[in-house]
Amino acid sequence: MSAPRLKVVLTRRLPDAVETRMRELFDAELNLTDTAMDRTALEAAVRRADVLVPTITDAIDAGLIAAAGERLKMIASFGAGVNHIDIEAAVGRGLIVTNTPGVLTEDTADLTMGLILAVSRRLVEGAQVMAEGRFEGWTPTWMTGRKLWGKRLGIVGMGRIGQALARRARAFGMQVHYHNRKPVPDMVAEELGATYWDDLDQMLARMDVISLNAPATRETHHLLSAERLARLQPHALLVNTARGELIDEAALADAVARRAVAGVGLDVYEHEPAVHPGLLGHANVVLLPHLGSATLEARQDMGDRVIANILTFQNGHRPPDRVIPAML
Image (cartoon, rainbow, N blue to C red; front, top):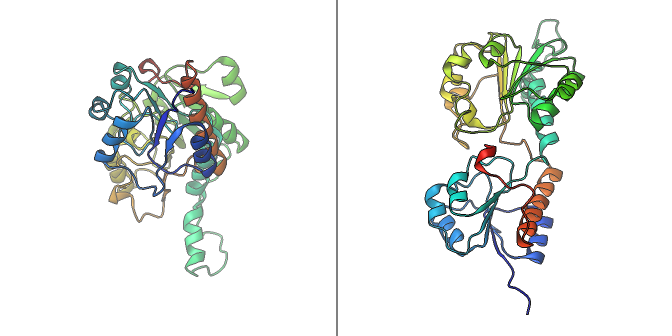
């Protein structure tokens, strides 16, 4: 008699092809309504599942992990970030935690470059002018933005996405600078023409554009505090497509109100989906609804990666994308 199939509980809707494959391989429980699970529903899910497949909208904290049943063996998260999961509590409970790194690198870098362009060239503001029928013809001084060629880009976090952004920025003639926990290999730095700064404060004070591409950890929470935001030059642009917690959003709203920064582009927010009201309604602030990995290809690849991790675990091997506390 064949072994019983793993009970896999999905907390949100995933691409149809991914859900179909999940049903073929596992005893997969789908969330057809795509309604985010509340605390009660999540507690029930971790009690009946062998594998939980959450997304970044689900808070998998120590209390939830403690409430899990004996069946739960794995948390296979759909997404690259894992700051919504208490990894130490999960590992302490003997659970395997995986994510889906790498597959959304190029898409997120595309969006980041798009935000830099949108803020610097006032694209959203211009589109709004057209939508409202306010365009009265070209003039030499109207809606002038700033060119990117020759500008200094400071990348905070030089992992996969940071490096992919650097390649795009070089094609736009930007000078690439970066801050990271440690320098990238010389070969990578040479390919990207990238200058390393070990002191983040010094780099921030000298850049024309700052892009945040670091993970959310205890160390990076409010990495851009009010004090650090004050180091930016008044003509600088700030873009964040990583995690909202990297910025003190109230301090950023204050900086925008004081015109201490020239422009801001955000795809993520500190208290998502809420946005600080002080960031709304400014022509020089471009806000997107967390679209970093929102391509059909990326979401399909993320689902395939989740399945690969579960299958590897089921077959008694170490999943390729296992997350352990030492990695954070």
